[in-house]
Structure formats: C-alpha cells, structure tokens
Length: 282
Image (cartoon, rainbow, N blue to C red):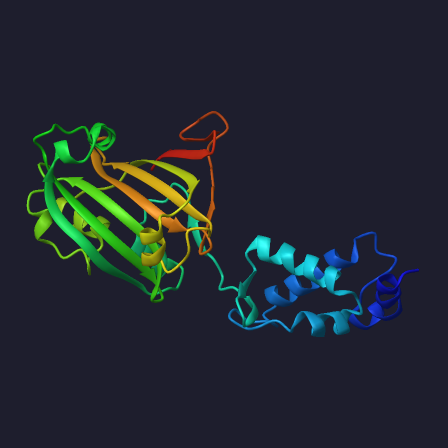
C-alpha cells in the first residue's frame, strides 16, 4: 500500500468516513460538507478550514480533499477567493421561469432588498431598436419607445443588467415616471390598468464583455445568462421587451409546470443552447 492510501486508511474513521461505503472517499467528504452547509453549521460567507486542516480532519491526502472541494465549487456551494481561502457562497436567488412578477416583487418575495441604478432613460424611435425588438413589440419605425437601461441590485449586490423597451403610443406619459425607484410592472398596472397575461421567455448562457462584467461586479469568465422576455396584456397586445444579462453565480432558474390531464396551456423546450418558456397566465 502506498503512503497516500496508508494515510487515508489509517485515520479516516475520525471523520466518519467508511471504508465499507461503496462511495469514494472524496464523495463522502463532499456529502458531509454539503450536509453541514444545509444544516447551517457552516454559514454563507464563512471560510472553510484549509486543505491541510481538512486532510487532518478526514485522514486523507490532499488530492482527495481537493477533488471533494472541486465538486462543491462546480455546484456553486463554494467559491475560492484568491489568496484568502475557500468560502461558502450566499444562497442563490430562485427564479421560476414564466413568473410574471417584476424584479422588485421577486426580490421582496425572496426576502431580499431590491434597488436600482438607472443608467439610461430615453425616448427613441422604433427604427433605432432593431428589427427583432420592433417585431416582438409589433411597432413601426416611427413609434416612440421608452428605453431603460437599469442595473438591478439584491441586498446591494449587482445581479442583473437589463435593457427595457416599451412602446409609448400605448402608454402616454410613461417616460415621466422615475424607474430608478418605481417598479415598471406596478406602474403599468396602477396607471394603465395593464395585466400581464402572457409572456415568452428565453434563457441561454453567454460570456459578458469586460464592461458588462465590471458593472455586475464579476469577471467575463464567470457563468452568466442572457434572458429575453416579451410580455402581453389581457388583449394579447405586446407590453414590453426586456433583454437582461444575469449573473449565473447568483441565480438559479427552475420550471414549475402544471396543467390538467387534457389541456396544454404552455410549453417549454430546449433549442440548441437556448431554453424557451412560454406561458399563458390564468
């Protein structure tokens, strides 16, 4: 038996590793750390013991500990801070695809404090926004459009960079509202009696540019998502088109799909690397 296996075999019992368990040692360590995080024994933002300390605790070699930590890093439960150590990440923000809640409402539902930095607020023409967005909003080249570029924060941490386009021919005076402090969806509901009843949402992985990454306080090599949403009102008229860049290390997306046994009222499918979700809202 070589030295590495001798060390692992002689002292693994101290940390409840089992030689009889068919699971590899690194996987047992991964599960124990994961369970400690789930029970709150290791809190978000708290540093893990060093690799040397974990080796001593579990009675295993450093490669075994590193493999366990690498798995947890890939799962997003841990993060490495260069020159400092390995830390437990903050819980990810949950977002149900197909939800008609705006950002502020979603953050409040998550128990987080939303805030917004308004980077751009301007009125342009339909000819300036591109054919794809114009087609989604069903507008002409002469239609006046409100464009908002907003950096969205959760608990003072930047998480989403979004560009919103809303046709002003349907919502006169919308450009006078302060969308650094107001929810767009709430404003549309309260001032224009708009109810979002249908949306189309796509999600795909992307690389951020250096400028986008700087605004989101991340780096271009970190996971990021591109989300595009087009919403419609109770008369099936387009309401808004939103293009968002989302920090993938801070969000977790899921689908909750319910329908009766004889009715199909929505769809979700994967096309190449893009997930599309469309849902009529009851």
